[in-house]
Image 1 (cartoon, rainbow, N blue to C red):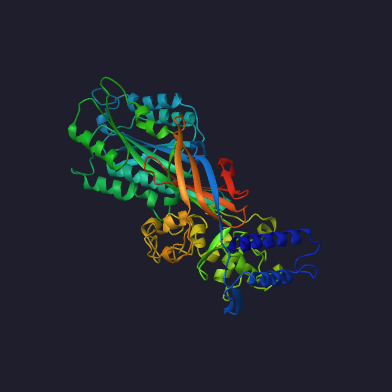
Image 2: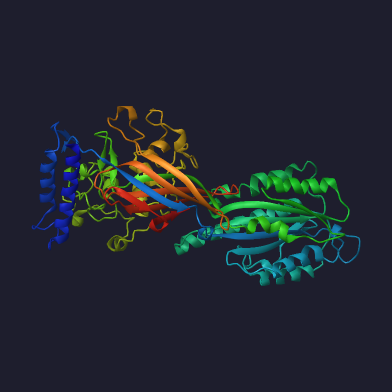
Length: 576
């Protein structure tokens, strides 16, 4: 009988959609009014219950008796194609120009500058230009470190884009013959910090001013030196403090970190007379800088820039962290402690939409830019619309929602997390972060499963990972409950007839050329109400090589008779 009731309710909703679509009059006119339809649906819904009705916040409600059926969702996909990962690669070549190089004479490690500068020019000339690769040059010697004059396009953007342009700058500096004095390591470190901070700040400002996606950068610092520092002494506490606490912390900086994917420091020790202490210092800098170390005997050979840069020219690949399936057309109702139909996916169960006067077939009934579920959560009286008939002419106005965007159906979603920016202000979540509170669950799914989505008090305080929290103390962590579609705030043991989703994930092939893994996923026991329920898959990936950068892809497709096959062509959102 419950299955029949479920089918009947679905049929009523479809009839409602058909009537509204075919009606020549506005649903708020006297023809087919929302009020009349809602009243009819309320009367019909009363016949579904055997427990009578009760009063809740001044609204008549009924106990639900709608039971879901079970469907199957399949999904075939590969990890992210490296070509889709948009980021810049910026090299900061940092060359020692101290007196031990022996400029203008003999006996030094590189008197004619051919090892440091000539080899770099040859490396550049043998490479093709790449629109996402940039270069700058820092020279440190005597008591200072300076950006090469020609590399400074502007005071806050010391990178050049083309190989030819940068090779010309390197050649120009080679002829300057300024090798003299000591080896000021602290100065090159200070210069590197200033360059990265200024460049990242500029990227953030340009993205905000132009309202465009922020393109992040990976910074690779290539340090070449032949001698020990003259501004610090072994065990070099100042050098390592500056490296670990300033340079390597830049990706986590509150002001500029969002524009910095990673910072790596590669080092090269070049010599004619080998010195263990000099070598070990540069090797340890590379280790602490998450880079590679190389040594070059300039008496018999030259400096190999292919080695110093090779690892960073590999395409960025990702690894699969996890995936989650969602039936958009259902939602947990905490009042009845049951899974309920939600045909329009606005996080307000159809039974509540029928009772409260909103349209169960339209996510934003009063067309003010805020979905019914979000508006019901923040409104004082719990209603999804200001007007009880949800007439757009009397809707609440949210100043963050652009009327033209609402009219055109193009609400901005900066972080591509399915929540428009203006609705993020209602939820008090970050419109530029798909995981505002840092617990590894998208904001939308936290809202759907009635979990906190905002940051904890205090700057930078994130919520513990959902996989480590069990809000309802039923032995299943929050992340797992969301994944199998059980409520993380209702004890599973208290839910009669609970049927969690079951996942079967198979690795079917590996693509060596792009380092992609491809998977086939089958999810069984998907609770469905309509047969054409909307199914989404959320794919979480991390970049390899421990960059800390993560990606979220969302795919969606409607079922047919309780089954669906989703592929990569069904992508609807891509966020990073």
